[in-house]
View (cartoon, rainbow, N blue to C red):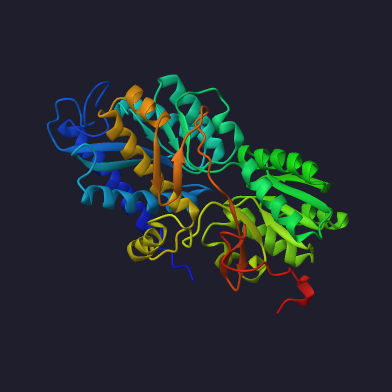
Amino acid sequence: MRNRRPARMLATLTLAGLFALAGCGTSGSGASGGSGNTGGGGTGSGDNTLTLGVITSITGADSEFGKAQKEGYEVALDEINAAGGILGKQVKLVYLDDKSSAQEAAKDVDQLVSQYHAQLILGPYSSGSALAVVKKADTYKIPDIVPTATAANVTQTGSKYVFRLCATSDDYAKAICDLLKQQGDAKTMAIVHEDQNFGSSAEKAMLKYAKQYGFDVVDDESYSTKDLDYKAMLQRVKQKHPDVIYFASYSKDAVALMKQAQEIDLNAKYFTAAGTGFSVATFPQDAGKAAEYTLAAGQWDPSAKWQGSKEFYDKVHQKFGDYPSYHDMEAYAALYVAKAAIEKAGSYDAQKIRDALAGLQMDTAFGPIKFDSTGQNAHPVIVTQVQNGKFVTVFPSDAATGKILPTPPWSQRK
């Protein structure tokens, strides 16, 4: 089972990252560099460091995901520096906390630009924050590598400076519908989603694909993540007797939804989800028995065929004592994409890095990376099911490591 280190460790690491940047700033290096400045060290610094800015959720409701991202970035950082760095410079990362808020994420972009003269941004985590960062980065004409945010509109702003590694909410909905169609015994569906950018995008995607696949959506509920009492909403879902429930939820709300579904005896043939809170590594532990049999669209597991996947899994576990989810892996791959783009550009210059990203083709432990004209990478989706407290990949067949188990009524579970 998962063995997360306490929050104190994250705070220590974060402060260490900030201290590193502050030290670089006083010595004239760090994220600064300015247009055309090779290597990214501060202008005239003369040192041998390249500092890159990361925006993620270190505090607030999404901090569990921010912690996962940080683990991925740190493992990539260790590997890259051990192999000689980027353009011959050792790399440092500075983490800015968006506090799980889109407004704070936008302010972080301003800080990276004004204080650190950033030429490239990594992150953030959530779809709401990502949309805010993409718009700000476009204003500054700085490329933003988005590891995890799945809402479709993140790459639909018309910006030429957004590059997203992960699959989208549309891909999640289609994968769940493909699985249900393969199973052949579901006709009705209820959608339950959080009310911000991620949840709204997931709802819109599932409404589209449910119609295409012939599922009758009998209920569509939204909720705020600020209130974790969902029993009244779940009672409304129960009254509609859906075969399938499709959740779009973050971490704490995913746990609360399943525990309260059990509490009010809300049954369905399939409890499905758009990844995220139902895929984070702590979900089986935090939801306990209520997590069993849930199906979640996801983007990676350590059995993936891509070279380095298993090794990454082992390194995260060795370094942090955790078992990584796809959120860790996406951040890990994002830093390698940044490395490849800077090296292809031959310079720490925003426009040159942007142009390098637009033409980039590379293989990573997260799979092949190639961005289309909107900045979207085509990434395959898998579906996992919680079985005996562990995630088991059950769909599609060429990626499956186990079979789908039928979901028994709550009254028949042991």
